[in-house]
Length: 81
Image (cartoon, rainbow, N blue to C red):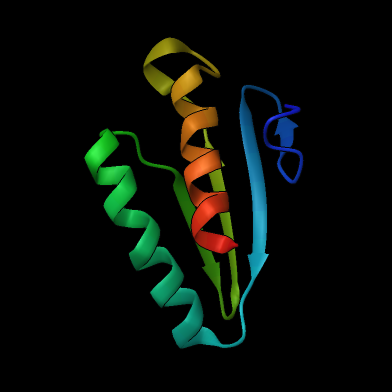
């Protein structure tokens, strides 16, 4: 978790909420992260509430967290910064 300090562990997943400037900004953010997720073939669960985007990573096929989840979180953090 040290490599992704803004994320919090919740059971077998890691989660982070982002607050963007507007609903279109939230949609644009999700669109940007979608390309990295698709390229890695590892997709977060995405919840959009107006201008808040909550992302959850877990490797369901492995029953919990793997390096894929942390790599996905690092890529999202890079987009967000």
